[in-house]
Image (cartoon, rainbow, N blue to C red):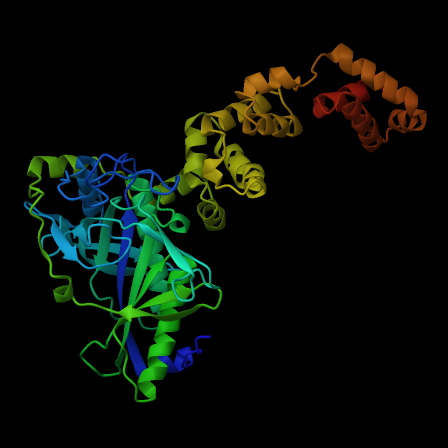
Length: 500
């Protein structure tokens, strides 16, 4: 069992040290094919089925650059206010690891495609922190190792390991910040807010699905501490592949308290990678962290340099969508949402679904109600992401329209949505197949009302004597008789008429 590291109280850390952060975010692009070959770029699949001689590093196999990935890299750089290189090239990053079939990673070293940018990040209290971007460069992802046996699922204690190279060669953009200083007590919050803002930005650009749970966006969090008054950065550790916003915040906070305890006791920080444990909110040592010299970078001889024209760069700049935080403000104003209502929409990952439903003709309140309440419940029941539900914003808008024109009650509308989710067709088809349309024929409703009044003469007498509230019992009986397909408002009107 790994010994629990000593930590220092967070307030004492802040009294004695200043934190310095560096965040490296890896983003898998959503191109159809891999970075340097024609293999399908899809998540999952049977192990080692999306592979070819190129991504397996077979002798004599030659790579070719994915043009769409280059375009996505440039769009990301422009959205991060970066300069786009007029000329850049790939390099070989040499190291041995079982999930790197070539024994080197094709990346970019001293000539990235985008550099010198920034992202202004809004914190919880509405203040802004500017995160300076060092670079955003292109590279390829590695394969995946599966360690079988043992209690942790990691290599230590495993009986054997299996390798899946489906992910090897998937296009990656690595976005590296400059050192983040002056964050003080808010360092963990800044780290979380930055990754959250970056995720929103990338989703808005439609260059990645940014699924942290699937590894298509993951953060390496570098942390070091400087004693108060010092001018040189401390030794850093790099917590690798943190895969949730909450974990980014917790990992930074924990490393600050661990570093401080080591330094205060006279120890030294080892430059190393660390692994974050979700269950304990602690990190544990990985491997000693290499320097750039250890990787023996040299230019990739099998790929030509990339020299995007300035016309292309400006075309891409002009095509960028408005930043998601600006779009949210516009939608909030247009829809008349409170800050809390907007936050609920964002937290539910429903904002763009609601916007698309409104674009399809629904009223904002109706669209928001469907996605945040009923459909969110269904997603939870089905253990799916909201956007993965088999119903489109246009279909939700159609259901809302049928409710608005009186063709459906809210209860019937939910049954229609259930039918669409079950794959029974478009909303109008579900209405027809299930016989869900509202009974609006007055003669049919009157017959059901007369039957209910006859069955409850005491209630009928109360209504006739002026106790109109008693009509609710008759409405309920009629709704039951019509299997919920009557217009309750019209039923009530007809009851009052029948009772004089």
